[in-house]
Length: 232
Image (tube, rainbow, N blue to C red; front, side):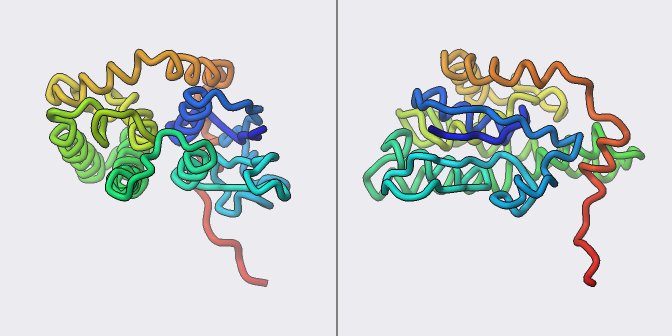
């Protein structure tokens, strides 16, 4: 059984995409990041960066004690290795999937995240910052569009954790001030992933939480006001 600590953000959706595709039994534990659930001591005990998602695998492959994993990319790698699914076993295929997984966690996610922040949440609209991250998001969409030319999925003909990592960060393309019409290969891939039954099920899992009120001013203070604690 996988215990998934989750909120319906792009990084949270990555993990439900995998779990639904793989058909693994899992239990959702909501972590309301606007309410500060990510700072609860019981969550910090296995997710020290106070970020979700995180998982606890109560039945690891070695038969030992439960294993905890934080960071969405690490979780995807762990689940792929546990199940033998969505990660090629050959060295070249695995290398390619790893490259594009790291491309997402180091590039597309952080840059699109800053796009969201300065466009939607920042207390003042700073044109330089907005333009910087809108343009960088567009550049990264272009990278992915070129990669998908002549390929069904990011790593080739098979759907992998590289696709699961990137897709949720393209879902809010309108909020990111992008136009999928400008990226025909990306749009074709996006619509194919969107139509997968497991994708539909995964996003349905988040709907009960997505219907809650948008981020409040108090929630913004929690989400964006974090810093290192003072030393005693």
